[in-house]
Length: 508
Image: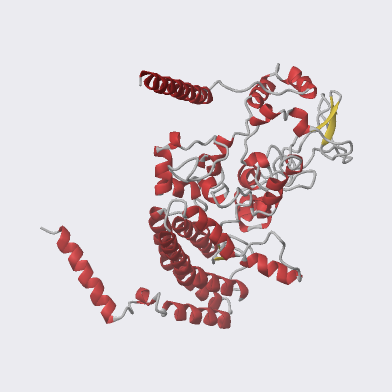
């Protein structure tokens, strides 16, 4: 019996020691992982040693090399030349201390290791962000706000504003004979009209589109940084695309900032519901993996509505029209809006029930359709009428109603729709629907009447009459007749009853 008892004690002792040892190893590993100065030694190739030998001794080079030393790239031996090496004949390449290199690292370079990510990105809306160069936004920057008389044709408003997010077309500095210029060290010089620039849709010298460093800040290339909402806020901020502000006021944002230390932002992999449970970030919803779907670098893969234009449509509608017009088949990577919505709902359902998610999408769809039906479509129809009928000239933004219409859809209209998409009630209401309604009834309609009267004065009677008839038809419709004092008696009575109850609630 004593022998049996001793055997049990030995077994218990061994198990206890094993448990304590395992616990201590786990604790030590966790402590080691969390130490801010803990990093494995960088793997430095002979070529990279050559680069670091010079650059680590100089001001900005020292910072760059120190950033690289603590990066994931350094851990796996991806050094300076692995990214910056160019081939003889490359338009952006030049000889530098015995190596042929390029200053700008493009998606073509990143794609040598990150092929799938670059392919996904190339298909995304991000990659085409520089297409803004022909938009009304760019007319504002280049003509209304700015001027081309600076720095031999530069436009400061666009170059320092729009292009820093959307991207510019990078150009080399050339002499009067068209030859590329270099500095005293033999380094190619870039045209300051177009560089520096890390805009997401940058058009590079090698023909590629995009800048990976728009999101993955060099030379740390930190996944923790890229998953943080502030990363997206560099561009998705402001009066016409306030996604970052909307996120901050949403329950998602509130939870993130309250529990940021529990988010494991540097984990690999980083799967919602497994590696973190506190809150989703922008990356969670639009890019990162779930237990059921992989990471994607096409930010449109989970978006079902496009909230950018004057009238919203399903996100695949423009693509379908484009390929049909060209007589081409839809590409293999094409996803329908239903597929995209299913992808996003899969993210939502990691935290919410299917019924909850479906009800949210009903609310969201209703909000987008309300904006479209009540304000977006009528305002756009009337605005196009006065343009087509010659009641406005061809100069953009030289008449008040052009600014009013632009504000209505480009600022307030987007905020209303985006607020609903991301559960930001203040942006849906006071920064959105309220301002849309005020803009339509108090600015757009009165200015439209002035345009009509001016058209009559200028002899465009038929066009003026046609526009006025359509305006009156819209204002007399069910959604707008209140503005003319034509609400039904039942609706008027209901509003009076509700108003009395509200007053009684706060009266003495």
